[in-house]
Image (tube, rainbow, N blue to C red; front, top):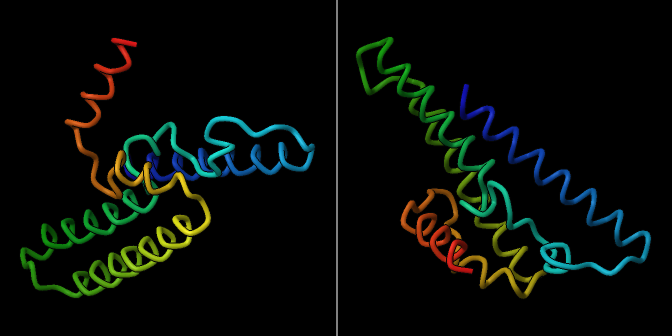
Amino acid sequence: LALIVIESIADNQQYSFQTEKYRLKEKGELLTGEYADGFKQSGLFSIVRKPNYAAEQAIWMTFYLFSIAATNNPYNWSAIGMILLILLFQVSGWVTELLTLSKYPKYKEYMKRVPLYVPNPFLCIARKKVQKND
């Protein structure tokens, strides 16, 4: 259930960001911060670049783990679904990374700062220390 909540929060954060970005553009207002950069970098997107994809993949891994518990067999049919869906998200994540990188020059910096799917607790701790010192 927590993974569904994370995915929903990430989707909502992205939707709110894109809605506001296009509202500002339509009004001809000056874009600043992440709106000027063109892509979401705060909230869950400051922890991983694709939190909704990460949560979705984790959901399918969890379904597979439940199937192992139910069947007492790691070699069951749900493994195929999990593998195919993870492959789908890996490929679509790679494609969207390339598209975003070609569209927004600052995305390369963001890629260096923030991991794609798996959070790096050491980066999170280091960021908090830098924020306290500022």
